[in-house]
Length: 332
Image 1 (cartoon, rainbow, N blue to C red):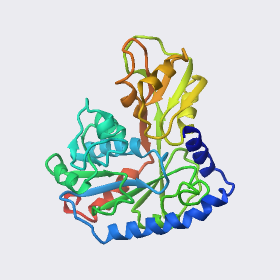
Image 2: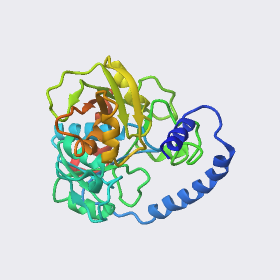
Image 3: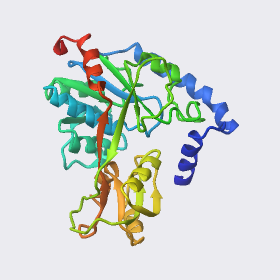
Image 4: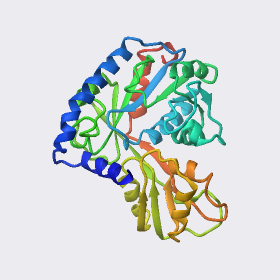
């Protein structure tokens, strides 16, 4: 299944047309998706706090999680008390929302939710019922950041931010023939479009498209074994579109001897860990994968993670604040 998953993702991001069986299924997906979104748009609940949605129109790989961390940091610097609201993808938690603690089990709350709790500096809520989650958020802060909220229309928002990778929208087709969750025309309802990755990109709309980038830092051993920084490594990933991670590793001067790719949100097992250890190479993973692997990893073996820090184009956060000021008294 891993090989099929990787093949589909590579096919999505090629310029050539996708296979015809997938093109036949594309309008079927589009019809059901459109009806689903329309139903959600008819049943909007206004949350108890101003809500900023951060989402995308492509499946995975847009840099949404590090952007949410960056946005939370900017809001805190501006004197706000943001609360991040997540669905808990890859977790098994019930629909009832829970506040995510640093020692939470990622298999319950979700890997992204745990990473956000560890790195954002603010409260994080995980749960499938995000309307209930918004009520819990009202007891913890003054502003909600809704993670992966562009297609979730059940909660009203005062600002819709959509991330699009600098590479664009792949082959331009909708799932399953391409990476698009919605047609590109859906960007018309976004307040801000943010292109993540390289500063060189072809605009998708006539609106201003802001640039934001996550830059790699120095490798860190999450097991704190005291081992020296490795040069020759194995890169292991359980994320969508891992090429950016591999390129970031090379930019730090690492030599990737081999790599192991798992599907996005992969639930690592003890056998996965042993297979990686058997390679007898230093293992480097993303921060999102590290929150899952560290609970299974031997304490005497280094597990290297590549941290990232976000940098936004000058004026990006001011544009976000300007949008908020026009719509809510709190920001006036």
